[in-house]
Length: 209
Image (cartoon, rainbow, N blue to C red; front, top):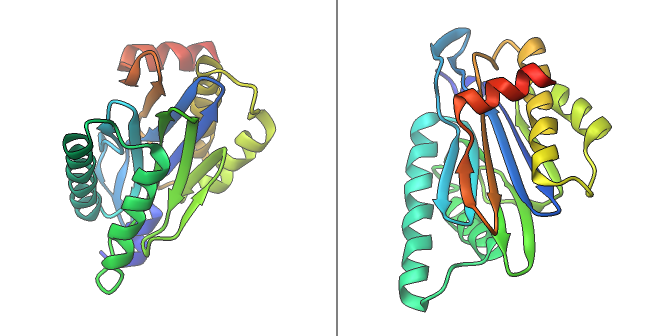
């Protein structure tokens, strides 16, 4: 499996809404033109108020998530308070940049809610970090962006953002061979923290669209 194939096979979406952040991904993991796994989890809880998505090599993603979780937990322990989203993105950027000689082959979305409100960042394998309101990564992202550009608005609430994110992932799955099988969705709000929607909830929303 070469690096190009490892980086191609997925679609992830992140949205900032008025009351929180929405993440959505599909669950297909590919090795070239082989569907290696149909139930790959690409959304990770970092803390009660922060989550991530990954596109890229599974082993690199799992290792990176362990590092981020540990550092965020240490911050809370040392300082007696939660880390803000921007600082978590900077921390992740530093980890990626320090490993650029042997990079993590992942593109990461990191977002959450803190005292400043919802925030979302995109990070590349060498530590480049960009803040944006809505982001898609992976091989299906051109299709997903078509939906997002048409339907996303800064005035959306999380419940509405979930519908937009599902539409974007569903469209990508229909056109991108490396994306498919099923859809995962997670939300982060101040009231409920990090929450993954159940398979039944996602399927119900898909039928309603």
